Length: 392
Ligand SMILES: *Cc1c(COP(=O)(O)O)cnc(C)c1O
Image (tube, rainbow, N blue to C red):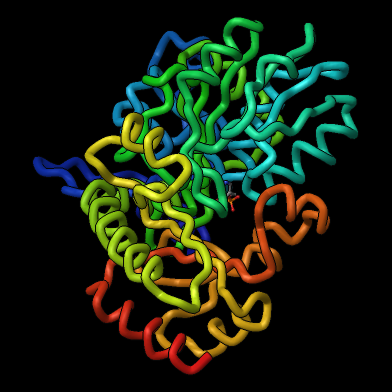
């Protein structure tokens, strides 16, 4: 039978051809839904008796490929991927708490996470105590209803390495779970699950993606926690697009190489800033002068300390504004972890929701510039900072 124009439009090419070979890279399964031959086969997939997919919010082969890579390099049992880091973070916390519960969180966190914990969770009657996990023992802050301890491996933006085994021990002694945002370190530098964390979360927008072209989030944990987060995620619905998942799989192939180069470059740039008279402080865990260098040395893999550092301009707020204006190829970009070296100004970007009091407590001065060190020849980057600083 001759197909009509609209039928040809609708049905041509809707079956993959059989072939003796297969694409070398992962196919992008860019579909919102999957088709079945009959009701019985749909039932079998729903009941977990047959492998298969139903609807991309429930799962997609690209998500599975990405999740398999992440759970294997983290040495976790399973992983989930979402459409943003905040999606992954919000779900991993929500899955652990109910109204009336309490959580403990580091007082220096990514601004969005800080705000989520402080204001969104409060609306659902979940209280929080913010503590300084670097200089304080967190034990006295536990309550009978404390369910979660939430920290970042390397705090943002003052780059302190957190002693995860100590926090994990305290959390578990009080029946709470330790959730760690490992976005700045990546599994190349830190595998928090092996140091006692229960759940690891990522803004995959950062180093996992690494090219400033994807917004995504990932959670890695044991099967039981992943099942709880999966159930919440299915209903809150921050589904990762298969194309973005595919970009992350592509990016992960070079993660280790990139993190080595980011880290080597960052250490050289940090050493340059330490010796510069117009820089009053340098925050980088790889510097022996860093207050958490010993912790970083003990916990981080391969003597790598990451690509993120911050500097305090001796010239304060004015000095910071002038440096940002003066730099040419080094762009002012309110994010991080791309291939190019970029700057950010935490007081007005990632941490703009903090009050002056909170900024002070988090050690974020108005002269603080955060630098995401890229993959360039580092001498070229040092020269550009040197030229620009000379003009201040
Ligand atoms: C960017 C970032 C987030 C938020 O992730 P999105 O992908 O922007 O939603 C969370 N934690 C850290 C450490 C970040 O840098």
